[in-house]
Length: 488
Image (cartoon, rainbow, N blue to C red; front, side, top):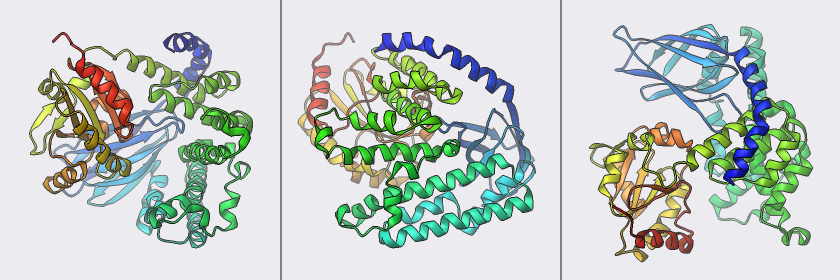
């Protein structure tokens, strides 16, 4: 696989050169000045900033607040990017364009923008105060209380009201058309994603079989790929994400067919991406598929070969190129001493004592470490804990430690809950910077649960290890490492 990746890097050279020249010609520096009028705020951040609908990689920019309560941020940017601005415990959605140069007044949970690029961000804050933010869009589906037949029209009204608001606001304040186009694409993509996923959410929350639900025509409409695909929406990361989710939904349906049952597990995914998608959407969905695959230490060679044949879009080409580079970079860490990004990652124990990841690994020298990166708010993380306890009990007496790193802010009450959920009060630590922690950023990990394995010398063996539910395969790997005589 490494040989394939190394050879194939040459294929992307021309595309990458074109992309780099294009990006460089568009590059600019966004300038954000501002003042914090209340609270003891030490710094202001632009977090989760993403400028690529294909990639899950985000960036954080932080600046201190000076003695006059003022701050200055300079952010290099080549295209539209979205994220959030954070001061203390308050945050607000933000959108940046390369030409932006604006001033921000922050007072507790209120925010005011003035200058070039201010209007679109004032609109996002306006949506937030009126209860029409992206987060509000998702709230109803998270609760799973409305019947599907009532949910669809409610979400359609929400979508349409947001369209009315952007149109009236833009006419009044002349919001950039690039942002308006992005917002409309994102608005429709969120709605479509909710309609596609809500029946499953509802059936899960209410313990009802999904095929027994009464569904309206809207659900059947968005069960057809032709009613979803629109190349104009490729500026929306949610659009690319929902198509990936659609792939899983339709693939599950296809596997029930007799002509598909005899094929491999991934055959339905390949059929849809290769035969049913076209144009820029096809490039972006394939690129997303490959980038996700590579981030999890795998390469789908069928999609990779087809992507090489059709790829024309610079962003798609460069996204895959960067994913391949990162894949090779991460693979080079296997069986090697910890690199600095791991060693210097900041942690805290359950009573607030600070330590580095390097110091943590010294505590377990001579033992295999199964690292569980998780969060209290993550359902799959919590659901995996009984399996983790069962496996740990089976391995009792072997030099193996199950170590838990949470990405969420913690206090005594939350630690007590963590002990209860994880079924143990041992080997718990906090990643001080959450998903911005050094080794998570370096490894491009922005999801939980995530599992890693380190050998008795503290060397990284697997950065995308099996979860504890895969009891026998994981037990075999951990046992073999435990029985291996490392040179300590």
